[in-house]
Length: 73
Image (tube, rainbow, N blue to C red; front, top):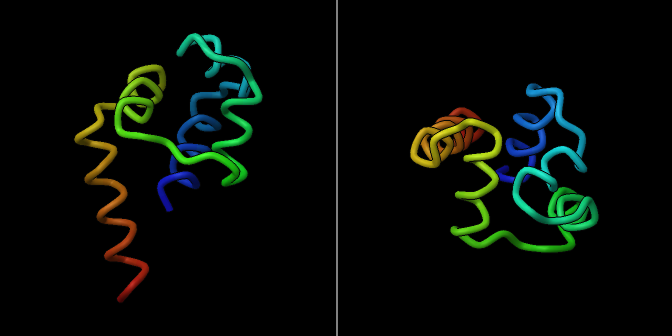
């Protein structure tokens, strides 16, 4: 759920994986591994990614929670 939302947000911003990676000081394979579920994201990395995507971490968390609640109904 979290990863799908990160990817969706990245795509809404019209960022490639490389664009996002550059913004957080990483490489494209880092973003790719996250998006395919090969690598987990810790809270600090999530904060950096949200910042790069111009999304407040708290707001992102609320969106994830709403999505989870709507999925379980």
